[in-house]
Amino acid sequence: GSLEIWLEVKSCSSKRAKHRSRLDRLDYYLQKTFCKTASLMANACKSAALLGDYPKELVDASYRYGKHLGIAFQLTDDVLDFKENASSLGKPVLADLKRGLATAPTLFVADQFHEMEVLLERRFSEEGDVDRALDMVRRSDGIARTNMLARVHAEAAMSAAMEFGDSVYRDALINLAYLAVDRKK
Image (tube, rainbow, N blue to C red):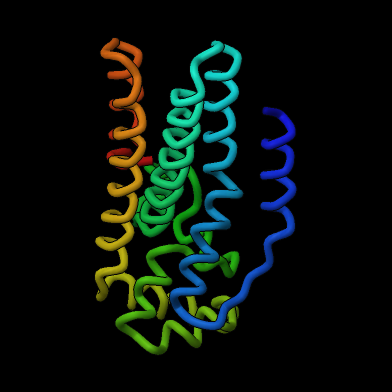
């Protein structure tokens, strides 16, 4: 119930980065994404199911739906940050890089370009770092891998929604998961 949700929020607020390897960084990034975006969606969906007095299996499915929807949404947001048209995006382009934030595309790039490791360590803080990072992202499969991971999470959300009975509401949840990864802003 509400105590579980409070403990989860408390747990998210106490997480600290351990950047020993690329896998550690990606794992930390996904945990941060859960805490920042997906936990809100997961707990909102769970709360709605609890308030609707649904059975435990559907409460759990609601939580999984929100969790995976939130992660898919944030991964897609990471990709959109690399779009060249700020007016269509609704926020400044490369905002995360300019704030020194590592996102999934840059973490995946580090698998192909060792120089990205250096930029990640110094949080894109030196003159030209943002431009070099953008160039590496464009020359790599970082965007494609991030899109693929977002689709994996959207499909997991759809799978959780399939646990609900056949209805227009279930179909709307499935469509929402699809739209989370197919959006342009």
